Length: 310
Image (cartoon, rainbow, N blue to C red; front, side, top):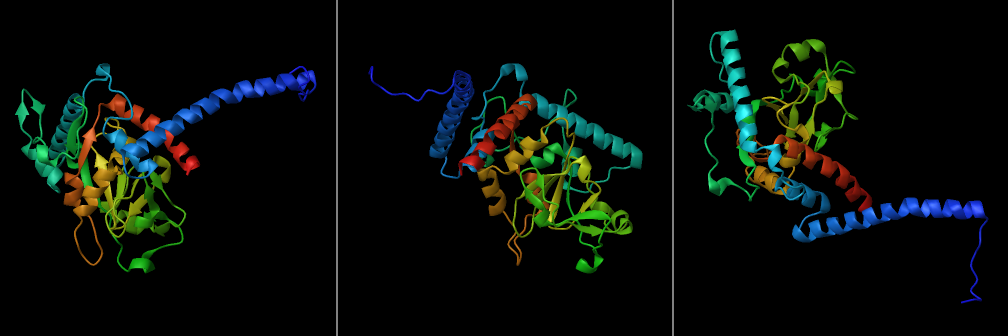
């Protein structure tokens, strides 16, 4: 060993080499742990990495449950109270209840025990998988104030403009929370506020494709507006966007088992489609709000690794 040759850089460079190694070694360790976790996910679910992660997330297996964060039953009660108050406000404003969907009709049939609104329990045979005790199965319609779909202007393509109000089609709904506006069409303000007024989009609307390629999702943000959408796009407007994590809801909608159920129930026509009834009845596993946010944060940390490891 006394005769062993080693490459000897200048002292300042030796120090820089040591500093760089000390910087990189913890990152290598984190990378190895992340890789090990992703491989474990894939062994437990026979789908690709992203789908594995989404499924684990909505089964309560991605982050821990914390008693101090409360329960989804408490969260659901708050949402139902907000919905009941919203329905009452609309009734007072118009002088009569405007029932436009099963969501509204269900709201009118909500019973009350000690002034606590409730919804019909989810039958055990409809529940797709086991969830933690602090979670609840809910129907998408029960936590939404409106579920509708877009409108196609008369004349089809000839109604489009070179500028004006953005008009979304199914191809603009890119998946998870992403809107792809690279090939966006436009309609004029008159059409937007007139014939297509029913399908004017708002910030925090969740979009889902219901014709052609089914089940892709996106979220509308303030800087996307003004926007409208065609009839291949369904709009889900939650009772209170602050009561839940919008990103968690789209994560749930993209879970492989929920996607499988949605597409299995599709209406069989020349162009396969999802009805609004199917969307309203879609079951979502709902965690407490703080846990929803932790799930989203964990996925935002891990999913980019999936892309780099492909």
